[in-house]
Image (cartoon, rainbow, N blue to C red; front, side, top):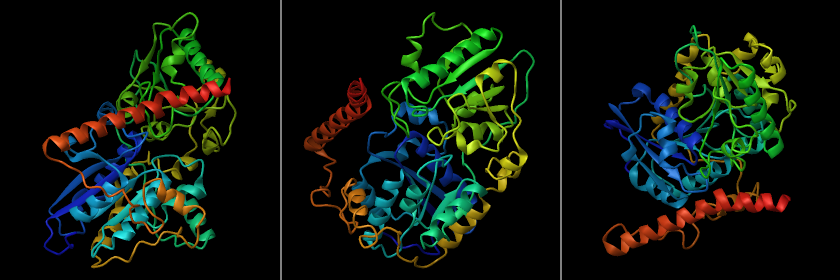
Amino acid sequence: MPPRTEKTTTLRVAVLADSDTRWKWGALTARRLTAGASGTSAQRVEISGLLLRGRATPTPRQLAEVGDVGIEAGRVREVTAVEFLHTVRDEGYDVIVLALVGGAVQAMLHGLAALRLPARPVVVTGYVGVVYEKLADGLLLRHGADIVLANSRHDAERFRAVYEGVGADASAVTEAALPFLGGEPHRPQEGRDTVVFAAQPSVPASRDDRMYLLRRLVEHARLHPDREVLLKLRSKPGEHTTHIEELPYQRLAEKLPGGLPPNFRLVYGHMGEVLDRTDLLVTVSSTAALESLHRRVPTAVLTDLGVREALGNHHFIGSGLLTSWDHLDGGFRPEPDPQWLAGQGVAADGTYATAYDHARARVDALLAVARLPDLAPYYTPATAPGYLPGILARHHLAPDGHPLPGAERPRETGGVRGAVREAVREAARGAYRQGVQRVAPVIRRMGEL
């Protein structure tokens, strides 16, 4: 890896993501952290996208639907964990953004540490949205990065408390905000009345609960024929997002008796574009609620299925947003609590423009260090011998972070043999995704009968 010097003219950044939503978070985070490259000698920023191969690797359609994240399509490619580590070793990145599930972050931290680079990159990670489950597990798996981004003051306080509570260094926790907030503030338009339900892949999980929500949404459309009612979907059947969707609303909608009213539609696309025409956003616990609140769009968080940790809507206790379909059908519109909003990183007060200043300054300061200390995750073979090896093995890494035997086979990139081998890889990847995204959910459902 080429060492960083004062003569560097390009700040090289890599984003490694494992799903469509985390790709969006990681790419936009990289852009915000390097905006202006203010504290470095770099004259320009070059961001490369790497997609970690797995069950949720985004399809080209999903990448396109994420919207413009400022990274050219030609600078995005799919890799395994070991290929990613080889790329880091060979390319000389200055900053790496790990937009991954916690276990994958931990594996990459150990893999990067095992490279023993003479001048290692600054490593940044964080969460893509609301953190309502597995707080301790997810945080400790992310420990060891130079910067662990928190999307709000509320999250930053919780993150530090977890690290300090186990005796781990909490200095990496850095308050920022969700990187994909933006858009124009909500302005009601005469003749427009649009209600959007932001669906989630795995919340709620059961067929009965999802059918209930769909039925109530359709009934709302029938009760208000002059109102446009949209069901905003995350993915098409067979595609995977950050979470597994075993019961797509598209399929459930086909089974509704009486069909769908003319003012009800299923929509895809970039959430920001949908919010441009939204007059009321309804959800169970989607991060879309925070995007909506940032733009001052009236927002409702449903209590119909209870206020429960399993649903994630407990995160909105104190927000003033909790309500039910019965109240919404009658015309009720929740009013958010200003104090709650202030702690959630929503930044509806105009402070969003400076939300990344502190994080950007920390990146700049780390880039100025001649030699960064070795990465030191909380979990090691000594502190978690019954947990860490399994996490690393899932990414073909040994307990010391080095690739397992057989995981380092070089790619053949030229000639007929290389082309055939790549075609076989693509076929295998297609079969794998077909298995995990379509066949496995059917088998699981059959097992529940």
